[in-house]
Image (tube, rainbow, N blue to C red; front, side, top):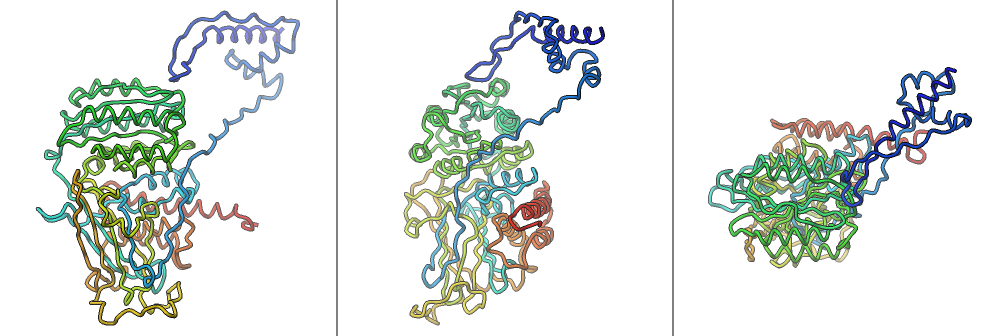
Length: 566
């Protein structure tokens, strides 16, 4: 009788639970309708096996869990499987060591992106090492503000600092650090913003770390914008559509309401969304304003223009309109980093990765000026090394930003842009001529450097940049001499020591092949801790903690490598 009563209760509970069904829209994932449904008839009581299965499946009836324990073992609750890892990264080969007598000139575009650092942090905080191709060392270095001296009033839009010091990575070598500090602008003097948000609302953006986080990030940004700035919103999923016409930030409630109504669902027509966003931005183009499209996505373009080369060509043409592009990446498991890097680099843009609300605040509130207001376009760096003093050199990072030597003087060749208050850092590891640390044998029949040509110089640094919107570049030059050299790492400026620690961190995440045996995680921590400085927002302290997480993940990965841990 007790079993019979339990079965009856189970059937009743099942009927109650089945009393209402919800239909979900196929296109956008929103709730379409909720309506009562006819409950299924209960199974015949003679079919005891089916009734017992109903007991197993129904856990909402009162005391069912306790009763089940007396009838049969409790069912095993299986954890849902981890989402399939489908992140996409560009295959990156590290810059090689180059012989100065053969290739004395190194040319590259600056990079102010920070996406790689936040993405690497996400991997480490989840307990695993990031894929090596996810690590772009220059983006790790440029995540931090080094507080280089500001440019003098009335001078160029940025100031440049040169530091040369012994390399802690390898004995017998040196580091040459080039630091560029962009001029900050007064909040009240900054130009108006004409911003078009292009929001991915495809099904892949459904999880909490994607579209919901993107909405929160946009609300933070609105708090930093002026009432006269304007915001428009375009979305794309199976198709693209305008959600909000250009609206002044003074009508913040209307903008927030439009953001709140966004829902994820459907396939990803990202290319069509870009077309519509640029079209809307062009319609609202304001002379004297910063006109920018900001793309919020996990990068999963699979409908419409989805071929990377076609997207690159489209964005390349659109940059001629004077509209800048920012790309904000979200989420994991479906993150197309390669696509986002391509279109941001091509479209006079910047790329950041938002993994937490704290990172959203850094990118869109604390660093909003640097990420929105350009002060110099197409910034290129060219370094010529003196073979009489430097036998070899290697640029750390910037692999995706390398340029041909002739590109430096060609104003039609696109390069990176610098925003207000942003700093950019590049580091070369160099081998002094005659050092035992040389990695490449000199040519037997190579032309020897002329003894009288050195003039005390290690290298000659040239920078080209354009004023925002200008077509002709300006040239700046600097010589690296003994006046830029310090005798030891301890005597180097704080900014040089901390940037070196971050560079070493990136090299270790890449596998550490470029580092000597005496430099590892502990040395990185010691160097970074000694140069932490004031650390107003705690970013440097977080970096030091990341080195501990990386060391732990590296040790665990070593146990899983063939021949290890046996």
